[in-house]
Every structure is written in structure tokens, then in C-alpha cells.
Length: 157
Image (cartoon, rainbow, N blue to C red; front, side, top):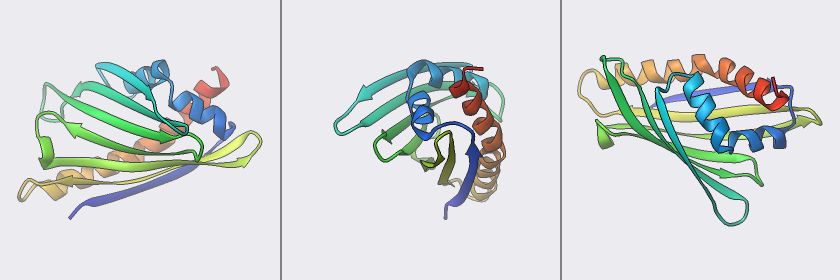
């Protein structure tokens, strides 16, 4: 059974300006490195009806030592200000599944709410659930810092 996570908070920037930054290639490289990636390659594909797919190939420090590689696919519906993401770990394949949804709600001309929910499922007997809870907790703990980061980037700071 997967471990769920939910996070949400306010930003003092316009919703559309936030989406513009969150779908930008260079901004995704910067945020990935800011939050621990050693290397990151980003591909952006503009799809139909305001949809944008970002594919991030990441190398990050591994909790077990060394580094690990993963691919993060984010499909944004920029018109409706929402996205679905799916992260694939190259070492563990389908044994580790991390996915979620992001949505941005306008709360005023220069304010919005950034929300995210998802789940972590690690199919390793005995220790899988423990590690899933740790990953979900880490994602929730970082969310305020990511919101602050995105707010600064949108404001040009």
C-alpha cells in the first residue's frame, strides 16, 4: 500500500507567472540543482491544447551512498494550471514508484496557492513502507522551501 503525501501553501505571485516559470527548461535545471541534483538534463515538449511535457534526467546523492539516477516526467496543463508527475528510479525500476499531482489556484491578482498531492510506493519487503514514509515526509518538509524558491524566481530575485 502506497504512502500518501499532501502539501499546500500561498505564494505572493500571480498564478500564470508561476506556471510560466515552472514550465521553463532553465528554471527546472536551477530548481533541481538548488534542491540537491548533481546533474540535470531537461527536455520540453509543447503538446496540444496548452499542455507541456517536461522530462528531467537527474543524478542525485543516494541515501545509501554514491549517486542514483532517475527520470521525472511532468505533464502540465497550463490552461487549467495543473500537472501530473511520475518519477522513475533507474536502479529499482518498478519497485519504487513516486507520482503526484500539482495544481495552482489564483487567490488574487498577485497571489496564488501551490498544492501537491501524491504517493510513494516501495515494493521491497519489510523496509519498503518505512522508506516510503521517509520519502513522503521529506517531500512535505521541503515544500515550504520550494514555494519560497519559486516565489523569489518569479519576482526575479
